[in-house]
Image 1 (cartoon, chains in turn cyan, yellow):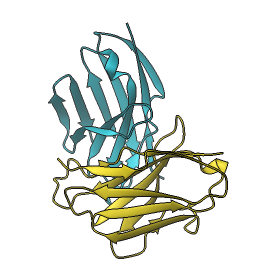
Image 2: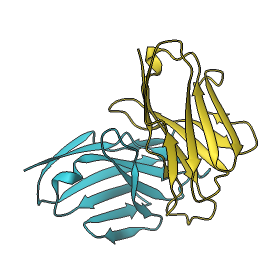
Image 3: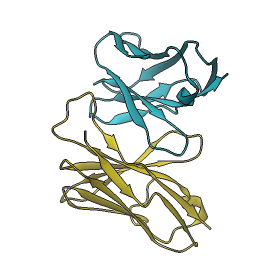
Length: 109
Length: 118
């Protein structure tokens, strides 16, 4: 079956750096996405990786290793507003998005 | 950028009521729309894929007679929860695929509908 694993919850301090990991086992691979979801709101797109390596976008970076079935989302200079759930999703061979359960990130002052 | 509008954002109603949720693509034609359900502290669960002009494709375990989907135009899909019961209370989110978009952003999400059945 298809499976995406990410930690349930993480805690970090304002101004610090946090890395959220995601491992996946899917039938085919056509890209990996990270979304941010604040409580009670719909997900918003953060990043996309289809080739191995690091994609940097401001304070957020995302890394992919296809051979390891692994990705991480790196958040720098954490702000209180970064408190949210972060969802990892993989587009499989049918171009369907398979969603992880999300990682709830708690930022403390 | 592409915008998806979902309405209503919040519904509270009595058990047995049918509730219709609308999902509109505002500046692009969406041949495919997706309906998700999300229970508290859980992941997005795909309920069905809505294809313009044809029947929706439901995921395993989703009752098609209970969750009626209509995608009659390229900009509108509706989800009707028929005879809703308290266990149907959830956060329902739609998304649409813009055929013209690049592969790095396959779906645009609506703001979601919080459904509470008393």
